[in-house]
Length: 318
Ligand code: HEC
Ligand code: HEC
Ligand code: HEC
Ligand code: HEC
Image (cartoon, rainbow, N blue to C red):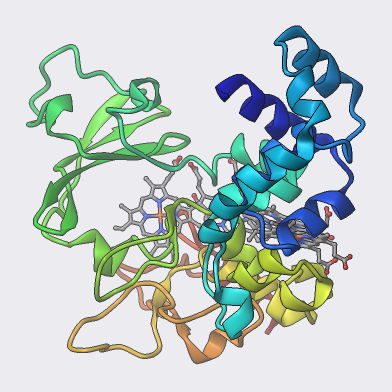
C-alpha cells in the first residue's frame, strides 16, 4: 500500500496540471488522487507502470474501477468545504506542493522557508557552540524549544505557558561568539511570531505553519486549491507596484502595528494584513530618526540595523 501510494504521489506530481486539477476538483482528497493517478489508466506514466509491475500491482491496475470505488469514500470525507462556502482560509504550503511541486522544491531550500526550527526534530540547524562552557550563555541546548535563523545571528527560545521567550544569549555567526541578549521578557507572540509564520492568530497563538510559507506572499489559498484559477489567488506580479512591494515590506521593515493597542496589547508586526491589501492601513514604520543610541537610522537616513529594507526603500522614494 505504502509503495503504491508513493508511486501514485510521484505520478501525480508528473501528471499534467489539468489532470491533477480535475481529480481534486471532483472532490477527491489529495491522497485519493495520488492512489488514483497510479491505479487508473488516466496516467499513462511509464515509470509508474513499471513500478507497479515490479511490485505486482498489475491486477490492481486492471481492476482500477473497483479500486476507485474503494478509494472515493475516504476522499470525499477528506474534502474541505471552504471552496463551497466561499470562505477563504489557509491550507499550508504542503497543499500547494501537490500542484506546484517544482516551485515547492525550490522554495523549501530557501532561508525564508527554514528560519524557525525545532532543534529536537532537526539538530543540524544548531550552528553555535554548546560544547564549551561560556559565561555569556547560561542555558543548555536542552532548554531550547525553538531556534531562529543562522545567517547573521542565531537566537534561542524557551517555551513558557502558550508563548515563547528569548533565552539570554545570541550566537554571532560572523565572529563565532556568544553575545548577551537582553529582551528576554518579551513574548514572541507580540514581538516576532507574526512575521515568522503564516496566519499567526493573536488570540489562540497558533499558526498554519511556521516560516514564510507560500500563502504569506500569495494570500490564503483554500478556494484556489479547491478550484484553481488565476482569479482566486494573489500573484504579486499582477498587483500594482505599491501593493506588490508591500508583500515583501510587510516583513522586511521595522515598525509597529497601526492598530495598536489591539485588545490591550502592542504588536511589532502588521496584524491583519494580507497580500493585496493596503499595508499603510496596518503598519507604521519605525520613526526613531532622533539621534542617540536607540535611533533606527543613521543621520543620512539609511537603516542602522538589519531588516530595514522596506524603511530604506520607501524613504528613498520620498
Ligand atoms: C489542485 C491544484 C492546485 C493547487 C492545490 C494549487 N494550485 Fe496554484 N495553480 C493551479 C493551476 C491549475 C493554476 C493555473 C490557473 C490558470 O492559469 O487559470 C495555478 C496558478 C497559480 C498561481 C498563478 C496565478 C497567476 O496570476 O498566474 C499562483 C500564484 C498559485 N497558483 C499559487 C498557489 C498557492 C500559493 C497554492 C497553495 C495555497 C496553490 N497555488 C495550490 C493549481 C493548483
Ligand atoms: C517571499 C514571497 C513568496 C513566497 C514565499 C512564495 N512566492 Fe510564489 N511568487 C512570488 C512572487 C513575487 C511571484 C511573481 C514573480 C514574477 O512573476 O515576477 C510569485 C509567482 C508564483 C507563481 C506564478 C508564476 C510561476 O512561476 O509559475 C506561482 C504558481 C507561485 N508563485 C507559487 C508559489 C508556491 C507554490 C509557493 C510555496 C511553495 C510560493 N509561490 C511561495 C512570491 C512568493
Ligand atoms: C512573512 C515574512 C516575510 C515575507 C512576506 C518576505 N520575507 Fe524575505 N525573509 C524573511 C525572513 C524571516 C528572512 C530571514 C531568513 C534567514 O536569514 O534565515 C528573509 C530573508 C530574505 C532574503 C535573504 C535570503 C538569504 O538566503 O539570505 C531575501 C533576498 C528576501 N528575504 C527577499 C524577500 C522578497 C523579495 C520578498 C517579497 C516577494 C520577501 N522576502 C518576503 C521574511 C519574509
Ligand atoms: C516585521 C516583521 C518581523 C518581526 C516583527 C520580527 N522579524 Fe525576525 N526577521 C524578519 C525579516 C524580514 C528577517 C530577514 C531580514 C534581515 O535579516 O535583514 C528577519 C531575520 C531574523 C533573524 C536572523 C536570521 C539569520 O539567519 O540571521 C532572526 C534570528 C530573527 N529574525 C528573529 C526574530 C525575533 C527573535 C523577533 C522578535 C523579537 C523577530 N525576528 C521579529 C522579520 C521580522
